[in-house]
Image 1 (cartoon, helix red, strand yellow):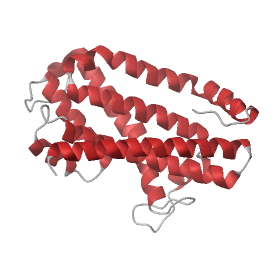
Image 2 (cartoon, one colour):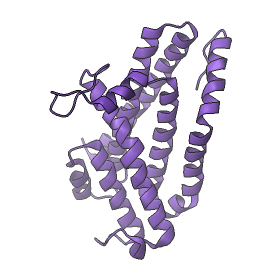
Image 3 (tube, helix red, strand yellow):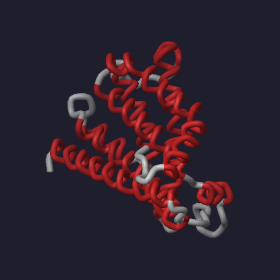
Length: 236
């Protein structure tokens, strides 16, 4: 397969993942409406796995699709990193150097990037270090069969923090994950494709992401009432 064929394959994978998420969301809404706890439990965890899969597929798509912006030697370097989390971090670094440092290997700091771009760089790294990393971590535990009890990396001790997250996963977490994954992949696509477009829409996309966090609790309550009230489950 050539580079473009690989990009098309990843694009198709992303489309199928989104369709699968839609189907699971319908099943989840119906499970909530009918108070089917085991079905709700299953759908929530499968959706978390799929949102993490969408993150991984999106990264591969961006790397292979943007041939004019990123050469294969850099693609190979990024994909050689041991985790999706680290690949996103290196993808971000590469994109900022390309867009704002003319591709030069210089420190990504306030002096070189200037105030606005450095703040944007820090925001994206913080997003990756916290929200994106947490989504990937939950997916990894679930994918390794840790649906109720999470273990440490050696598999010989209980990971209490992640276990608590697993036990408390709900529709609310699914909605929050959707907001983060959707906005994050949107801004990353623009970051690698166009410096001008990135600078133009960054505040808008990040503003929508952060506003959703603030209004999340209220929106979730209204959505839950709507699911239980309607004859057919609503789409969120």
